[in-house]
Length: 340
Image (cartoon, rainbow, N blue to C red):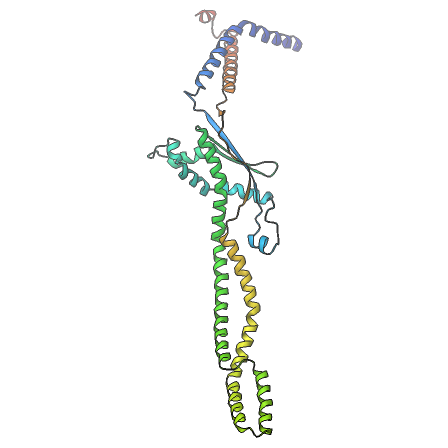
């Protein structure tokens, strides 16, 4: 019984299409024509797509890479840098700047008094701007627009904007470190200048090297005494008194200057590193492909619309006709209705 039922079902399907093939062909043809007509540019605005590709750069510090040579600054970034680059591309900062730069609110024909104006604007932006990481670790930017020139301009602008945004974020983060390093270096240099100026005044008064001068004075004084040169002895006593008065200050100033030399060198290096990181513009990506003006549209795909329209209509037609025959078989509707 099951075998007969299966044979019956198979033959029934075959004869079903024999009976209704003209009807199905007509409705599929009409649906295909309608799909071709309503997918034309008059009804659906075509969209053009421009693509750029870039590799993420390493996140190494410029000062450590160039000044200290700790890491190669020209290395390509890895997964972490790629994910960071994607996060910046998808950020509201990049989105808002692109919207403002190209006046996308007017370009997308969103009314200023629309109830959900910002939501509509962001949805349109998210639909037209796509960012993804390729299997080779690069970042791909795809931008679609009704204007092919504008699509290319926006794709290139977004790519260039990455470095700008990341450098701004970086500078805001490094400003505190730069200010602290600068203040510490300038403070110790100011103290060093004060002690140096004081030491220079002492040296101008004749105290240059306390130990050597005392030894020379005592040696000369002994010679003058042996020669009964009391005038020379008096002059040497004045010199000795001057060295005695200013000697302790000279020794202290000299010792302090020598002591802070190492601190000055350390703070100077830190200041140079912080200044290099803060003041220089660092590229965070390597551009591979620049976006160009597309010659062919990518949306809508008319052949796909025509195919889906014909297939969908044909499928619905089969369902309707099968239901119709089933109702006839069960006597729910009559041949009179069928003829009508």
